[in-house]
Amino acid sequence: MSKIKKLQKLLESKEITCAELTERYLQNIERQNKTINAYIKVTAEEALETAKKVDEKIAAGEKLMPLEGIPMSLKDNISTKGIETTCCSKMLQGYCPIYDASVWESLKNQNSVLLGKTNMDEFAMGSSCETSIFGVTLNPRNTDYVAGGSSGGAAASVAGDMAVFGIGSDTGGSIRQPASFCGLVGFKPTYGTVSRYGLIAYASSLDQIGPITGSVEDAAIIYDCLSSYDPKDSTSVGSKTGTRDKIKDSIKGMKIGIIQEFFDGINKDVKSSLEEAIRVYQDAGTQIVPFEMPKLNAVLPVYFIISCAEASSNLGRYDGIRYGYTSDAYKDINEMICKNRSEGFGKEVQRRILLGTYALSSGKYDAYYKKAQSLRYSIIRDFKKIFENCDLILTPSVPVTAYKKGQALVDPIEIYMMDICTVPANIAGLPAVSVPCGFDENNLPIGMQLIGNNFEDYKVLNAAYQFEKLTGESFLRPEVEI
Ligand code: GLN
Image (tube, rainbow, N blue to C red):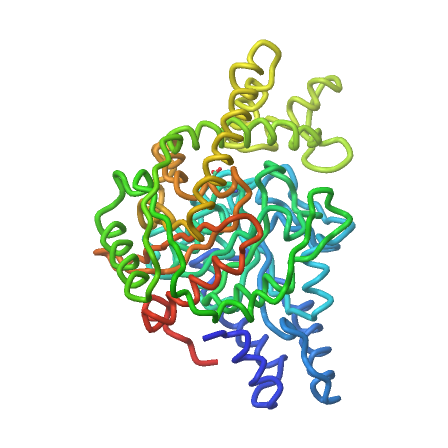
């Protein structure tokens, strides 16, 4: 059931004021954030000011816009004018953007109540929030485990009832993986349908903004509000709205593709939950169609070469001169830039910048970057072919469940490999959602991923919504009384 709709009903019927609702969320943050570390900055004053405006509108009998009065969080790589935006890096500590990201502008125009900025891996590079200078974000389901990453703070803010929804970014799975680890819905829309203007770039050809929510319907409501053409983003294409109306359509006769390679070597509990999910879809009258994707083993090398190459270029702007971290002592400009960058960026970010610079360097460009680009296009072609014969592809969201605290730091390469299921949708710009579909032996959530063809975001959310209904919402977190 849509929490957004439910709360708006309470607001409009005056059972609760927006100020009271906001206070309750702020109290939850106060109580839990010390342990969970979902927020790195709480914007209580701004939140209460917005709530006051909403209450005035309600008192005047005005109708609320779809996200009006709803308390929410923003990942700390989304620019917020006048509010510190750090990407959880020493490089940007103290940096206050002078403009708003387009997504935040839309939300602000709707009077969504911003509760604060959420924790993330430094510059969105990571899978556990452990590369953040603010430290790890724990999983509200079980605090021995991480919330995931890089949008771990966004997911934990929702899972810990510290926000109704969180806005995150996804370059290789950063919305879907933490949603999967926290038992939530995480939606990465088709590339270009939600503006990236004001999103601090990691890898521009892969980055996409999207919501983390407690239900599919909420994700559809948010997507309808955020997806529109934005002239400020040169890759913006906009989209048709009305997704929310289409999610309730029947899925009978829908063709769901299964690619065996996605299931090889995955955790046994993840596997059995996914098999059960496939049965649920079969019983609902969908047709399950098997496919092969031999190039799946090229997906991670392609992702890491392209994302690191783009990161090396995007992060080239941080010289610490006009803004950002400046070292205390240096003898000349070269040493200054060198020290600013080596002291301002953490280890993981430096590793990726170096790797990307290497892949783009003359002599290595053909062997790495060009090869990765050509493989990228053949993967895109493979997807196109598959989508000629099916509507959606069903995979695990992640081959495993949440990592234990500290685990991702021990063997980063092993953790990179766990992005295998999420990365393909970024490489091909496809819409993909993670929906909760079970629990492992430790009672940690398991996520199922549905990938759709370009601009068929509504189909992805339609099948996800029907799964939620068919399983009696049994994998969603219990509703907390407001
Ligand atoms: N975990 C992936 C990585 O480390 C994805 C990150 C992302 O989507 N921002 O690159």
